[in-house]
Amino acid sequence: MAETPTELAQTARRGFDAGITRPLEWRRQQLKQLDRMLAENAATIEEAVRADLGKHLLEAHMTEINSVRTEIALTIKNLKRWTKPRGVPVPLPLRPATGRIHRQPLGTVLVIAPWNYPVRLLLIPVAGAIAAGNAVVAKPSEVSSHTSAVLARLFPKYLDQRAVTLVEGGVEETTELLEQRWDHIFYTGNGAVGRIVMAAAVRHLTPVTLELGGKSPVYVDESADIDATAAWLAWGKLLNTGQTCVAPDYVLAPPTVVPKLVDALRREITVLYGDEPRTSPDYGRIISTRHVDRLAGLLGGTGEIVIGGESDRDEKYVAPTVLTGVSLDDPVMGEEIFGPILPIVTVSGSDEAINVINSREKPLALYLFARSAAVRDAFLARTTSGSMGINADMIQLGAPALPFGGVGESGTGAYHGEHTVRLFSHERAVLRKLRGPNLTAMGRPPFTARKERML
Ligand code: NAD
Image (cartoon, rainbow, N blue to C red; front, side, top):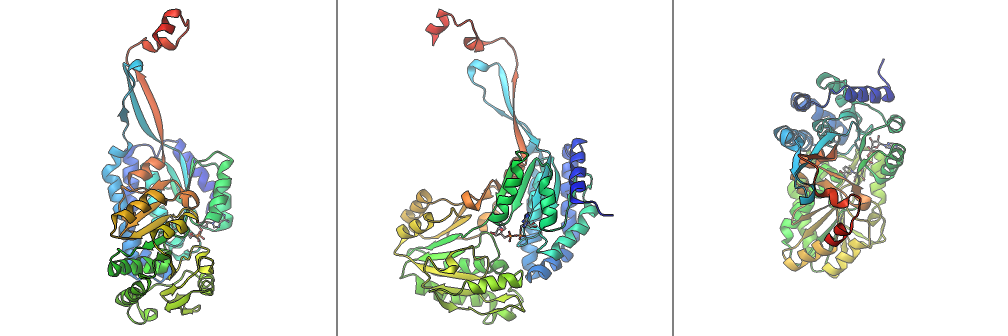
């Protein structure tokens, strides 16, 4: 009989307590196994992702298999360096002594993932938790059910079940998992559930990482290269049919830019998906009919549909859509769109754009298209966001030395590359005295007149 979520959590904790996960050799071997799992089952996993999200197998390969394998390869290569103690300077009065920071595993980690990149968003944190020497329980999203089932079947074949396991399920199973005691919870998804996760973590003072979403704004300046901007925006908005947490959500642009940008976007969408995206094998589908209905509902408002606008619930299809003349109160400017709809709001210039952005929640990503250094400096100095792309969108994710995460409503904590290992480690401060006693005597009673004079 399959183990319950509680039993699996307890197994992982026993595995950690027994010391299985600590040796670098074990970590390296598990990372290699994770990589083998992806390499040997790439086609099966890509088919599952296609069944969930209708995306082209090549897109699934690039965004789900390749990106995770690249991260694992980088982690294996740097494992020793990222986990070894580092020396820090010690102030003169404390010497002779050494100061070192030791990265220690936290213990047992829970990773809860969403459906939109169901492999990547589960396995990059899992790999990082293993690399840092933890035991892990992975909880994929029940919404991407095909991918969840494939990963559940593969985990026991490749990974050490004493310390790395997977629990399938939805709210009920996740709630049961959240009742357990964890040493870290890593959650990716929407902010409403993020709050549930944080509230559950309070009970045991468990640290949490929340990778959330929200509306990632774009400003297209008069100084921008409009054709290049349209190429980035069409690609960024339509990859995974807009169901990407850092997808450009809405555009702010001055009146002179808007018509040129719309023409260029129309051209770019045709370059990517032809005249009829519905029949293009490269254009994906929306995860569920509920989300198709939600997206269709966002189109009512003052904005004019200048590209697309069609949807088909049976096919879970929503056309690449661009709206102009959108007002900040329109439904499409309320929640995160998470679909292939791009509203354009006309603003007078960069100052008004900055004010609009700052009047809203802190975004996960902010994109600026401008050649003007003054505009770039203004955005860098006066706005905030988890990450920022200048004259490009989405690819900030591809640089593992850059921390990836949100700020405020868009999340807390960041990962990728070495940042993931740091996140899943406790940095223990170790001071070792080499000889003694020493000058710390200043701070010890008796506090004589002589000591007072020395101050
Ligand atoms: P989802 O519905 O799959 O939920 C995420 C996880 O939470 C799932 O594993 C699910 O089982 C669990 N869950 C759902 N309801 C729960 C409850 N009541 N109690 C406990 N657990 C529960 O995915 P989603 O939230 O729709 O994902 C989309 C959101 O995630 C978007 O807002 C997107 O921007 C954000 N996102 C953020 C990132 C990032 O890296 N910052 C990446 C991808 C998605």
